[in-house]
Amino acid sequence: MADLFSWQRVVKNFPILITKLPVTFEIVAVAFSLGFILALLIATTRIKKVPLLNQILTVFISFERGTPLLVQMLVVYYAFPIVLYKAFGIDSRRWEKIIFVDLALILNQGVFLGEIFRGAILAVPKGQKEAALACGISDFKAFIKIILPQAIRIALPSTGLTLIGLFQETSLVYMLGVMDIMGRASALGATSGHNLESYLIIALIFVLINFGLTAITTKIDKNLTYGTKNLTGRAA
Image 1 (cartoon, rainbow, N blue to C red):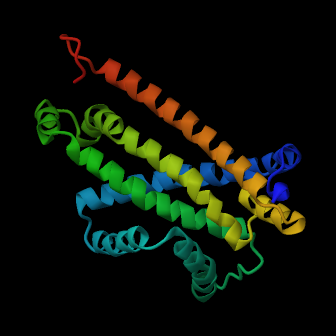
Image 2 (cartoon, rainbow, N blue to C red):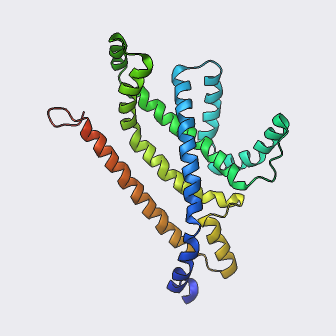
């Protein structure tokens, strides 16, 4: 029982695990940035109620929101190569597994961020856009200069939580064979017979990331709120 936990193994495993942290950051950066772009397209399509596309997105969003992320990854991993081959004759069986992981996470982030953005845009009073159009401002400029800044402020807290959740969700990617920090921990546990130390290290890393992202999001939110204070000194 005394050998269940050892600080020596913590010290030994930490530098080994930390070398795989860039893989996690790379996955998050790709998934969040491309998912962000996809989210804007989804939100716009849903708000404009584009025929056919809106119906397709409704079904797709229901799938993404109603299924576990691991299932989504497995569907992309097994179905995407078939679609590529049948539609374009492209054989993707030799592609790096991280490509399929990225694709699954991009789709997932696109859906969740898209719904956040849609809700934020719709939360801005319609009268503001109508007033801008009445003043001769184009629809595009009204969106960029009036609607979007307010929508960003509304969406920021939920977007920050989604980013934190994305970091946590990357803990599943090793199950598809991607050697990230969780995959390295699993490999260390398999060879040494000791898992606890590695998982505690990972838990600490994710907690620190959580604190860091929360602090950044809170700081940005306060700055945006300060910029919208009215003359009474209260946030608008």
